[in-house]
Length: 117
Image 1 (tube, rainbow, N blue to C red):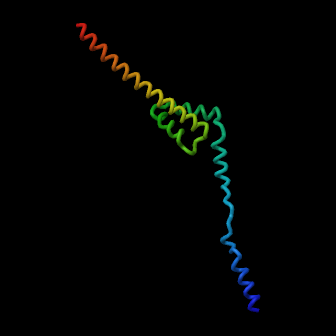
Image 2 (cartoon, helix red, strand yellow):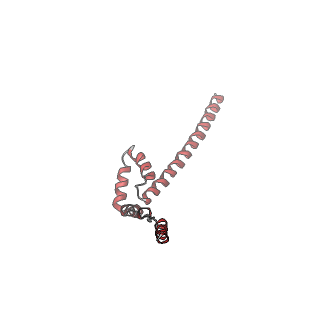
Image 3 (cartoon, rainbow, N blue to C red):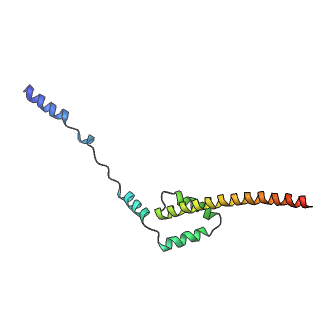
């Protein structure tokens, strides 16, 4: 009887309790839907609303950053505004370089005119 009792104890000892069993994590359905929603392309109506918002001064600049870096923005819209902001930075950089060059040339011309007089 002692031996039979020992086998039963060994069975219980090696059996994993039900509350400790491992379950595979499944992504909730609403997250899958949200991911699919972010992957769908922008419609013409969405782009029309976007361009209308871009016509509003000051709001357009803020919204470009919101759309570029928000996780809830559709991927195509986010990528477009990231590229748009990069082009803006390039344009601002080129403009600054041109202003510096024009300033240096302008100062040189003023000095030249003063020497002529």
